[in-house]
Image (tube, rainbow, N blue to C red; front, side):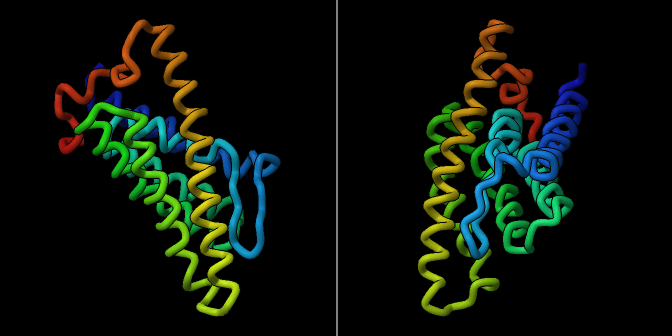
Length: 183
């Protein structure tokens, strides 16, 4: 199968998961008022997409945003989901450059937390409660990012073992062919 088509198929499948998880798995959601929520596994499609390409990561991030919007969650939560576009892209670029999932996850965790906190500022304002809200969002996002990266790693590691491939080639050998910018 052509690499471009394979990337589009993976983008479609992971985007579908990114949309379905916030809609159907509300039971896995932790809510800390006013605007912090964590839906377990919501970052897994983004983490897996980072192993495919920056293009796929961006598409999946857009899908995640749509999923949280369709789930009827408040706009600050949807805005936080939109940060998955940037976090996924940065992570995919890091994996492309360094071939290290762990390094990409470690570097993107604080980026993820800070971005999620920044997008909530217009919704919470600048009163005394803003600091507690921002700290909750940063710390919560980093913990959630880490938990979901472990879940994604377990999935990709199992698939890699079953297919006798490296985790960096389990979805196809996209990186060696430099197909990212052409899709």
